[in-house]
Image 1 (tube, rainbow, N blue to C red):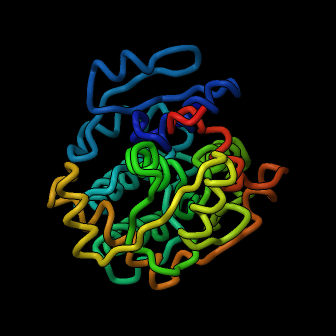
Image 2: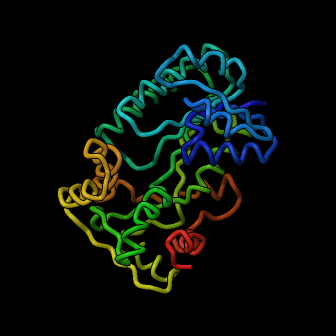
Length: 289
């Protein structure tokens, strides 16, 4: 069996590539860059070059793949890019498509529109498909606070008192790798929502991190405008602030990230990683070893 992984240099794609490689699965790890493709080639992994914006580059890879893991970066063309992948997979007779989605509800915003474009194509494609849908991921949200925690012992955001079922990246990629190795019928047309073991507010998350660090970490809640201005001041491009950051915090504040499931435990056979456990494992990343 061979699995084509799009976005193989990103955090989700690279994690899935690593786990499939360890399991002895033949992996086609896709990148737009020849250098990245060469760097990824190892063991059961072959780095391959294609561009989601150029549909003509996809069919030769699909002809070599039995299954496809569709993951692409947040981008205004996410929907079109993933539709290109789905169309090429269907034309090549691929046996399963697994798409990275998300379990935070973004009803009507830009990100939601992009994903729904791809979801419509997926549901009509005629190939067995599964969605792997993480909640808010600890690596992006907590490591994203690294500088504030290291230097000010503070986290910043605009989540208010919204509860968030934060999930560890390792649990997300393990779920995807298990699904990609299972019979397609096992999870056909399923939306596998992956969360941590508890939904907590940012102040509660800060308290758990404080317990893990042995130092007090505080959460500073801000208005969207003030938070956006801070992000831009610290180097986030102004054009990326809405799609990359604010739309996520807006849904948290509205309570749309308040979800806990047992999906990971059912699929992987062990409990999901807690914020406390994750923080203990990442102490050195924050310079608090």
